[in-house]
Length: 120
Image (spheres, rainbow, N blue to C red):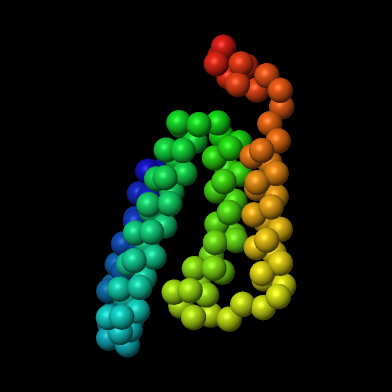
C-alpha cells in the first residue's frame, strides 16, 4: 500500500509539473490507446504489489519471494503471446532455467521445516 501511494503521488506530481509549465503538448501528442495501456500497466503493477504483500503475510517470505521471481520469466512469455514480440533461443533457455530453479527451490525444503514454523 505504501508503494502504491508513493507511485500515485509521483504520477500526480508529474502531471502537476506538466500543467504548471504549460506543457500541454504532452497530453495532445499521446494517443488514448497508449494512455489506456499505461493505465492498465499501472493497475496490473499495483495488483501485483498487493498480491505479493498478501502472499508474504500468509506464507513464508522465502516462498513468496521465490515464486515472485518468476515474473522475470513470465514477462517475455506474456509479451510474446499478447504483444507479439519475438523470442529467441536464449530467452527461451533463460525462461526454462528460471522456472527449473524456482521448482527446485520450492521442492527442496529442509526436513522438519513445517514443524519449526508451526511452533513459532
